Image 1 (spheres, one colour):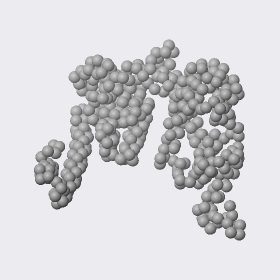
Image 2: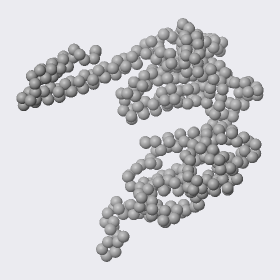
Image 3: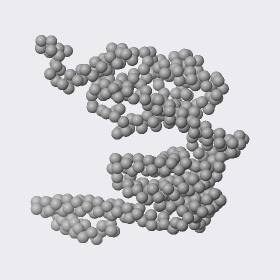
Image 4: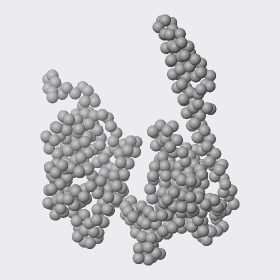
Amino acid sequence: MSGTGGVPPWAGDPDRRDRAAALERVRTLLRGLGTSDEEIDRAVQDDVVDLLMVDRLLLPSEHRLTESEVSERTGIPLELTRRLWRALGFLDVDEDDPHFTELDVEAVDLFRSMVDLGMVDVESAIQMSRVIGSSMARIAEAETAPGSTPILMSSGDSVLDADEFARTAGASLQAMARLLEFVWRRHLQAATRRAMLMRYRYGADGASPTLVVGFADMVGYTLLAQHLTGDELASVVARFEALAHDIITGLGGRLVKMIGDEAMFVVQDAAEGARIGLALADAYADDDLLSDVRVGMALGPVLLQDGDYYGAVVNLASRIVNIARPGSVLVSDELHTALELEAPDEFAGRSLRPRSLKGIGRVQLWRIGQTGERIAGDLTRGQRWERLGEVFRELDHLRDRGEQLIAAARRGELADAVQVSGAAEPDGGDAVGAEVDTAADGSEGPPA
């Protein structure tokens, strides 16, 4: 690769000189990670150096193994190895594909040691692997999402991208690994304490804990999604999640999960649940970016499994939120009774007529607020969303009218051209002209 007089052809081109320097750095790093020159040359030729760098930097190994070799090394039957791999959320690979590394062998060995020590049985370990795989997949997707981190700034050149990935990821991998371990330890501490307190409170006989289960649903999300750009909708969702997370955790609750435009939370005490519900309604009502939320809550025994909650109380809370008005907080009769016992001077309730809820039956519900607050105030809160809905509907109407007028004008121009050329029948021209007149005065358009 030398030009006249042995001078490299890229010597006078700063961009190509930088690329050559980047390629040399990439080669050196890949060689140190056990990659052969043949593999590197093939990746350069196929323009996939960045993919090779990702594979080798994140899963370094000088020797790659097939799934049969992993099974032989660990003593775990091949079918069980495949089950573990799938439970972690990974795709199946061909039997002869040397896809696995020493890290995979170590992971399978850890799986086997936990089972051998009697810490878990095989099925429990597989289920735990599903939880771990699902959680880690979400973290990984968040790390590589557009705009979240600079780790995937693409230049369109696989060599330059490989060099940049090595620089940024190489500096952040250890820090991220330590951060994940720290967060896991903190959450494990909190979850273990909760489990112990539950055992003391309800005994060790497997009784289901009694909790407040709540749902907060953003009003009009579907309508917003139809009128906002992707970036605008992403900002709305991010703001919705941030407010829900801060309010729920800040007031002693646990945010279980986000389900699109809905947040699910649990809390142990009835009064804390009511405070969270009312704080959510107030926060979204005061936020200029978001529409109102409606909140539904119920109190009763729940089933806790794999970090999620199940049971009749969860279903009841989910049904309640669907019938709540914008800005209101509706609760079950059991939760209202508990509030009267726990904090009679803090909260006030207004009974609604009994409602029939799908799959549940007829139930008594209450709209709650702070003592002294006008509980019917949610009707005025909802007016903001109703006005916003009217604006969207008017925009839809104007857009449709504009499209009709443009289409009619184009048809009119075509009719005029045909009449000038003498190629159109008179009746046909009159029909087109009549259509233009009708569209122009709007008599046949959609109602305002």
